Amino acid sequence: MSQKPLLQIALDSLNLETALDTAKKVSTFVDIIEVGTILAFAEGMKAVEVLRKEYPDHILACDLKTTDGGKILAEMAFKAGADWLTVSAAAHIATIAACKKVADEFGREIQIEIYGNWTYEDAKAWVDLGIKQAIYHRSRDAELAGRGWEEEDLVKMRALSDLGLDLSITGGIVPEDIHLFQGIKAKAFIAGRALAKEGGEQTALAIREEVNKYW
Amino acid sequence: MSQKPLLQIALDSLNLETALDTAKKVSTFVDIIEVGTILAFAEGMKAVEVLRKEYPDHILACDLKTTDGGKILAEMAFKAGADWLTVSAAAHIATIAACKKVADEFGREIQIEIYGNWTYEDAKAWVDLGIKQAIYHRSRDAELAGRGWEEEDLVKMRALSDLGLDLSITGGIVPEDIHLFQGIKAKAFIAGRALAKEGGEQTALAIREEVNKYW
Image 1 (cartoon, rainbow over the protein chains, first blue to last red):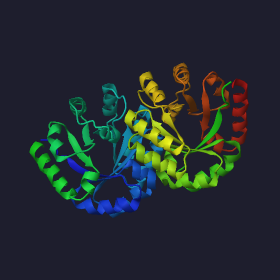
Image 2 (image 1 turned 135 degrees about the horizontal axis):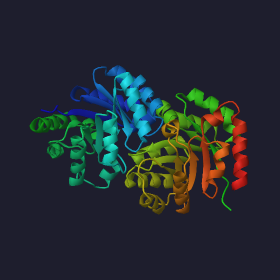
Image 3 (image 1 turned 180 degrees about the vertical axis):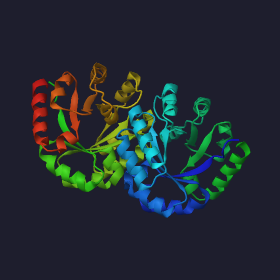
Image 4 (image 1 turned 30 degrees about the vertical axis):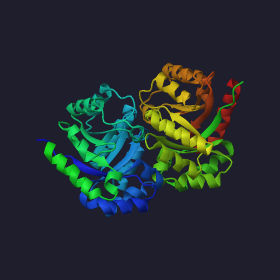
């Protein structure tokens, strides 16, 4: 039996104060706290440091979508306290390898953030490097443009899962969609506004209930 | 006759103090100051705000390699004072369009940062959106892995240039390589350590001398 998918809050506010407010609201019902790209660019690594200190027992993910300068960015994120760091699927394989090497040194993990025209050859190269995790999502902008979860997404996710990658799944996650992902090695479901807004705890419970049905 | 390529310093230090020291050293002989991805993730938008204030007459570029959340990140960067913002070639076209729209509202520009398995169809879609600039480079890690400028790079650059994109070129730029790029619509040559280190001004002069031969 595969491990039950975890629940991750993406903190993507424009300032640390708002992010800390949100973290406080959701910390009791999420497993993973993520410093999103927007928050990281807004506040820098201070955001990771402060959240690490406030939440020593949560998994802390840092979504830099690292695309170049892998060694430097990975050292920066892990030194600040991140457990997991995202690396862009569009990065040169040498960049991905550099991030993986640093992660190994720190005993942390990297997650391939899937964007752009990636191929299964690329995915095999990630697995060959020993990478265990990837993130699959509808882009926020594609989502805004009205694209739903499509069969094409699910086919790709199943293929990545079959290659051995644990997937974190994101992009407008709602409890009603969880069943779509059954059979996939889902590491986590990531949500932001859905968990942060009024009624977020109920949404979290509803997601966990669906998770319990299918994993 | 095409415009002469400009010279851009990429500030990629891990803290703002070091970046400001470097900016002070090079500001008299560069046209464009760039808040690099590393600096932006280290210090957040404060880096853009402070450099904007210190250098009101330079072009200020912000290298976020925007991959998602285009509207929010573009507004953040332009509000902080950036003139140009990089957007990843791997971003969904809706993300790129969102960034372009914000840039138009602010009267600023976006630059497509070319990474990953992009296609000429992608490039045509960028041009169709009205985008004028792209950045072409060897990845820092590929460079470390010993890859030089190859004919394949030059063929791609010429094709992008022929599509109408002004290219900023980066990745271990040295004066001796400038001649390789003749015939290309080069917007800028970007360097970091080469300009920041001892003798950087001489390197800048040598690059400009080569530029004057070929543009």
